[in-house]
Image 1: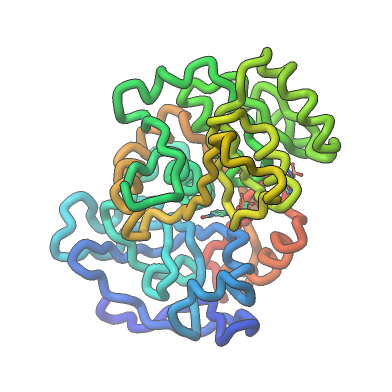
Image 2: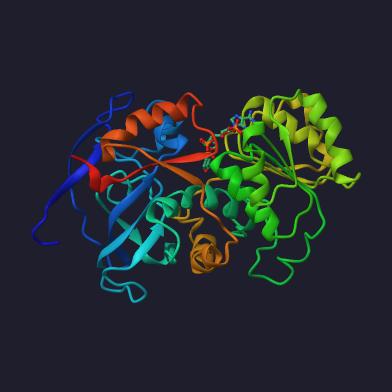
Length: 357
Ligand SMILES: NC(=O)c1ccc[n+]([C@@H]2O[C@H](COP(=O)([O-])OP(=O)(O)OC[C@H]3O[C@@H](n4cnc5c(N)ncnc54)[C@H](OP(=O)(O)O)[C@@H]3O)[C@@H](O)[C@H]2O)c1
């Protein structure tokens, strides 16, 4: 890489500014990093929220490069990296720091939070996985004693992780979202049953193919959904609810559906009305932070990445459906506008940074 000093990146010049394609330095890997040629980068709601919202606080400097999902080819490795070599095909999660972001042609990633992409999975498909899956895995299985952001189920790599939830019902709100699709698959892997989800009816077959047993129309009134749930669970208590949407109305629905003593995952700041909450009900709520590069999340993240290749080979985790945006990095702003307008359904938008003019 010595001959190439700069690359194309999608840059945000300032808070509330407009994205533009410009030049950025190609970063050099630290001892545990690899330099990746990014062939596919997925778009996520956080990428538009970062521009001008409380999430802007995550931006360390301007101009800023976003992008938290990537797949590509290892171009160079740091001095201490022994697990990867130039030419390996990997999937990985980006971070809120320019050298580690995926909306550019080359970025860095720490080797312990990467996984090789198996045969049969394209770079575009692989890029649909990291943030959505991490948002489920960290919310369920992170046992870091400092974190309040996990409901601490037994992970599948520990005794009982694949047996103790068998036959327990799960309710996943927003099953067609990227996060929701991974929540359904992970709930199935752990043996939860039935797995009830909400989505638009046109996504029902897709979600059943991932493991949902019932797909309720997300436009039904909450009272009707709450009335359906006990019939679908056969009266068993609903001790696990994952709200992959976490708007005010879905958080209320999720909290009301949850059995006393149960655990609810939310993906945005808590909006549950105080009148619904009773300290005596013992309901736990965890607001996840879904990035394996966060120092607190790294140990659980590394456990995930040790297994991801095999989970993809075995079909335990299936990628989202993907739509490729035209124009490389230049196609991202329009894609983000579609995400912001909720005009993307059951699909991950993917940019190919190498196709940037
Ligand atoms: N805390 C974290 O670390 C973290 C990490 C990742 C994402 N998030 C947040 O999680 C949310 C989901 O992210 P994502 O990338 O998974 O989103 P996404 O894939 O863009 O979500 C789009 C889907 O949301 C579904 N949806 C929208 N409103 C719904 C409702 N009221 N009920 C049920 N389904 C609804 C739609 O389903 P239909 O098409 O079936 O109508 C649509 O397919 C975002 O707010 C994101 O910012 C947080």
